[in-house]
Length: 152
Image 1 (tube, rainbow, N blue to C red):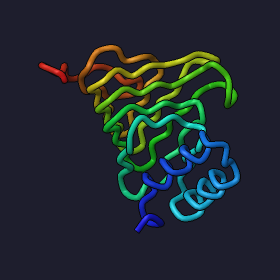
Image 2 (cartoon, rainbow, N blue to C red):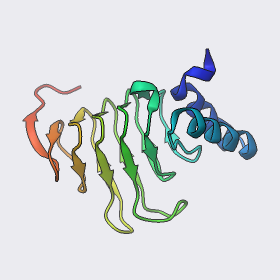
Image 3 (cartoon, rainbow, N blue to C red):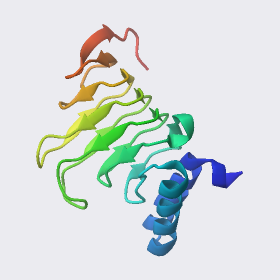
């Protein structure tokens, strides 16, 4: 059922936003917050259907975020841009990225940040710089803990 699938509702709200149906998009955003305590803005750019672990509980995403294909966000993830919505500052996440529970990804002040394809970010990690090499990152600040061999 669509009402219990926050990832599909978020994708629908982004489509409505692109089509200029802003009221519908905002209603879905409000529903997602009310029932899942997730802030999933329709202004975000989704390349595919993201997987939102644990019913997207407490996931917070800034409107200036772009997600690639096969992205997994676990509960309590925060994807933040240190600038106002609609500015040129962006947080861009590549394909096949998994972000663990409670992790925070935040751009520099009025800057952008990029996470390449095939990256895993550990639970409760803090990412404040671009990640340009596939692998597993963990810690605060997040550092490479395992290189990915033969990435896609």
